[in-house]
Image (cartoon, rainbow, N blue to C red; front, side, top):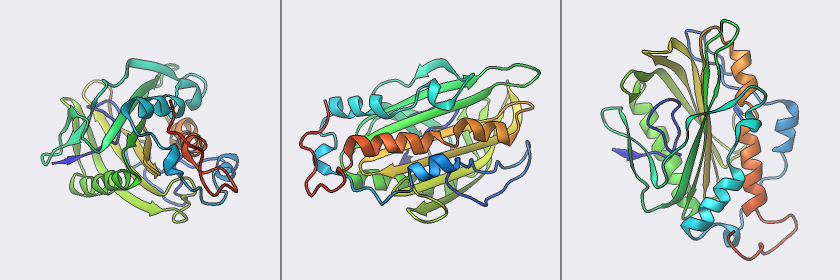
Length: 272
């Protein structure tokens, strides 16, 4: 059993734009094509590789939680028509664990993580179209190495579990995963990017619908977003909701704990 800070829409969740260009998938009943950010979003995150300043990274759970609150998305970052879902925020001190049986369970946050938070959103059903589920997650680890290990564990889990049960009646199917270092596959925002595409299926909402999840590492911070489509929702609609969210959250991370441009030694302190 491996720990995972990754979010999963509509399931047991914890702790994650699409930067992979040229990957394609099927239609509403097949694997989703990865979300593609606008030129504005890409140029905003395509500057020189940011250098994280260890002196600015959180050292305590309180500092980590404060950083998360400044970084994580709210409904407004997804755009017009996105609302808070119920429940809105994950329980403090818990994150999701994917077992060897490919079933997600909530467990206490492990010692290598300081804090994590997932927020849940939705686009309500309207105009004959079904609802859309969205999530954003930020996890702060004790060190950048701990964050990198989380990313590596997630890739291993995804390769082992191409079908996952989030909770009774909620599952992900046909999952495919790719990992890209900075500069590979269009990844210009994170030290490492993990992308997962597939379908989401629900006993109550129907499906399969396009699903994708993205998670990126920047210093000691892991951030992710995901989307599960709904009846009659096109991939273009889903792309417009999530493509720019992750790059914007990573830019906030860089502003919080990155070394100021031209600075040889970072700003003292680790947040409030």
